Every structure is written in C-alpha cells, then in structure tokens.
Amino acid sequence: MPASSVPSVSSVSSVSSPNVPAGSAAPPGAGAPRPARPCVTEVRLSAFAGHRGGRVPLGPLTLLSGPSGAGKTSALRAYEALARLGGGAGLGEVFPDPAACVPERARPDAQRRRGFRLGCTADGPEGPVHLDLAVQAEPDLRIVGERLTAGDGLVLLQTALRDPGRRAVQAAWHTAGSAPVTRAPLPDDLLGTALLPLRVAGKTDGQRRVLAAAEQMVVALRSVYACDPRPDRMRAPVPVGAGRLMRGCDNLAEVLWRTRTECGRRHGLLVEAVRAGCAGPVADLFAEPVGDGAVRAVLDRGDGTRTGFERLGDGELRYAALALVLLTGPGVLEVDTVGEVPQALQSLTVLADGFDRGMDPAQRTGLLRLAARMCERGHIRLLAAVSDASWAGEEPAARVVDLSRDRTIRTIRTI
Image 1 (cartoon, rainbow, N blue to C red):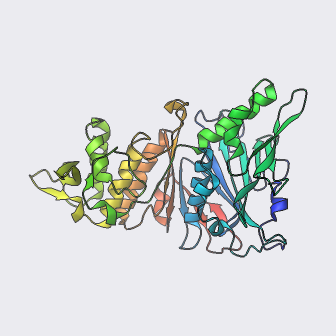
Image 2 (image 1 turned 180 degrees about the vertical axis):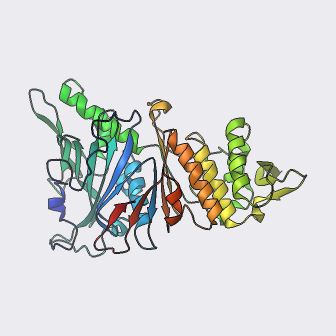
C-alpha cells in the first residue's frame, strides 16, 4: 500500500512494534506512586480522520486548542469511541460512518481495503497500560488488530485477522504457565480487552496480570460523559422523566427539577457558579411546572422576579449547563458507569466540545476555574476543546495541547 495511506489491513494486524506502542509517552513521574483511580493519560491518533501520528497527553484538566479544522472534535470523538468500545458497544454502533474516520488521502490496497488506527494509555495501580486498535472501515467494518501492552513492553493481548472469510480474529494472551500464551478466536466487532475478564481463568501469575491490566483499561475508559450544550434546545419546557442529563443538555430543566432537592450543598455551589456567569442578580436556580407534566428552568432574581431560561443568551445557557455537568455526578449524567467498581476508585471524564463557545471572557475564565477546583479532587477529569487557549494561561492546573492546522503533519505540543 502506498506510504501516503493508512498501513494496509494486513500490516495493520500488527498494530505496533512488540514493545511499547509506537508514539506512546513514557509514564510521567517514573517512580512516583501510581494513581489509585485508573485514568487515561494519553490518546493516540495514529491514523484517524485528519490525524496522523498524533499523541494527545492528558492531565486532570486538558484543553485542546487550535483553529477550525485542526482536529479537536475528531480527537474527542476518538476518545469517546474508545470509551464506548471499552463499555462493550459493538463496532457498528460506535462508528456509524466509519469512512469518515479514515484519513482523507488514504488509498485502498489491492483488496480495496482501507482503515484507521487509534489507541490510548491508561495509568493506575498496575502502572501504564497501552491499548492500540486497528479497524478496517472498507469494504466492511471490522477490527483487524488489537494490542494490549504493559508499561515494560510485555504484550498481554494481541489479535490479528487471519481469515478474512470468518467474522473473528485470532487472539493470543499472556499465560506464563505451561504454555506461554493462550490462543482463541474473538469476535471482530467487539473490543477484545473488554472480553478478557470473561475468557481468562486467572490461574497463573501471567493470567492474573492480564486480567488486572484489562480491568484497569476498561475502568479508565468507561464513565465518560461527552457533552456539547445546545442553547437552542434548552429554552423550551421539557417533560419530567428520569432526570439524566443528555449530551446536548436539552433537558436541563428536568435535571434541575430532580437535583435541587437531592443535595443542598451541591445546588448551592451551582447557584453560586451561575450567579458569576449570568447577567443580573441570581438568588436561586430551579425548575417550575408549566402544565402537562412539563417543567421550565428559571432564575430567581431575589426580588420576586423569575427569569425563564428562554430569555437567557447562548453564553449564559452554555455556562449554566457546563457548570451543572462539572458539579454533578454519574448518577445524574447519561454515562455508562462501572457498577462492579466502587465510585471511590473511578473518575468521571467529561469530554466538552466548544467549551468556550459563545462565552465572554469572564464566563470562560470562571468556568475554567470551577473545572480546576473540581478536577483537583480527583473524582472528575475534563478534556475540552477551545478555539483559542491564550486566555487560559492564568490557570496553572490547565494543560493546553495545541493542535496545528496542518492536517498532513500533525504537530501536537503541550504548553
């Protein structure tokens, strides 16, 4: 296959070198105590959409900066895709339009196959664990290669497409028993790493290491909430339902109807945040019934006046919605939590596209400070896309990753 295209599907089966995946970063602070809560510390965009050889290092609070077309949204989309695969979703559900993930100039090989590659690193009690994935997008969608690698370079799981006529890949995982590896077929539309706890017996030290690494990766990837508040959908009354915030925050009024009485302290923090981001006095924030089982969100101005959200500007609505996201938890957000792992050992990762869209300088700075305070506690992490991060320099907790406009040679640097 020409060098300008994604590596051919046959070579894609060997996702990376036998050692630490190509392009992966050394774990920061080698020798430092490992984080108690597994978390994703890097997303690799080896050949995905407009990215080639891209590495996005992640901290508790990370901002993706760059002009339109730099690939911020596609980087968020790659992270969300890995998270959904880690939660057990099928390939077709995660990538409804897989051709859009193939690099634009990738040419098909002799068998008319094209694909894309992505991966991530999860750090935690087991140390850094690397996951790399190769996906064939055309002529049919399937996983053709997956590799799970420990920080010392030991390959814990490797899959490869051996027979294109079968809807399965050949998997081999580390055993370190009487046989060095165990081989078995796995489905070609599911993430093998997420299936390992169901397939590995855990009888040998090697098997137990594989299980621990796979579970760390799955826990790190799940509990992800992707959001991009849509002010045009937040102004109208909404019916009362389960009270779980959708990714567009359309049902913010319904969530306020639920959360205002659940935790007075958290609601007080939300009112304080909204007071700083909305024009005029704000004494309270709540939802009120309007008939037919619907509610609308309102601001209590403290003098008997109630301002409905339909009167607020786009920046005010986005600010209020993102403040609610940062101050609430998985029980309120539409997120796939790891039910078998205690909440104290999980981190909720928020993926926010257009974090500063429509906001004035005071709103975006206030929201970033709120994010820094919440991320400092360790229960929440934020990866947000902004058009320009020059205003974020005053917040030392924020890691800014600058994506260049050049879509052929991707330059990603940490400020």
